Length: 329
Image (tube, rainbow, N blue to C red; front, top):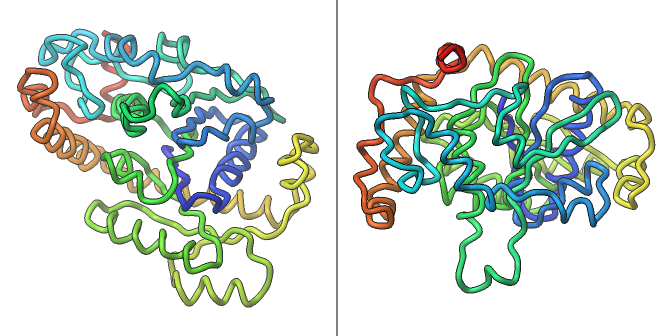
């Protein structure tokens, strides 16, 4: 399952995504965790110290190699230089699987040992001083979008992405790359404003959206969220001494997380797992192509000097069977 955690800055989406990753690792399930937020806090939330988190390899720094590997023998892509963040796979492209070893993981993924088992962690890299005034952060998450376009995950495999805050996710088509999107909302006007914006933008793309209320302290907070969010309110998370200890860098064993919060994590997994039955690979591929053609027309053709619409393989549908064929080849 491809799962996104979104929400306004400070809503607790990174904390909740890290708890969900720990929950999956404790069940010994295969997980690829991706930090696509500008603030890059997922590594510390998973227990890395600040120095180790800062030393994680940035996906953006390895973008040329990622492009070259994913391009494979696709005859529609003349060179890796003509690939952009939305380039879709076609016959001959290399596809990624969650549990395999490949050059992309070798260059960009770091194994983090959590209670119960390891996870692969990949990060976009921070927005640093050299980027100020000359770069857009969305260009950094282009490596994530390209990998998601070429990634095929099966039942019981998980890709968990901590997305950039607020509605910035809509600066690309990456918001359509997920089986399930959990929007973390505080019981405040600002918290639910992001929900309304996200729901409105996502409406036309059949994005599966569930709201998780965070920092819910009592009946008034719960009633507020129910009034503002309605049936989209899926679960809530309250105060956690475990999280407070984790934020101080001293997390207890994960099995000591409060039972109410463990139950919320179980419900999130069950909801994500249920989305597998509703997968529509043809729609997924059409959306991928839709955003690629938009980007090609608005800036990609001019930047690369190529007709990027020609990269679209009309007979290709990304699916688990396509990954099997690519692996056999």
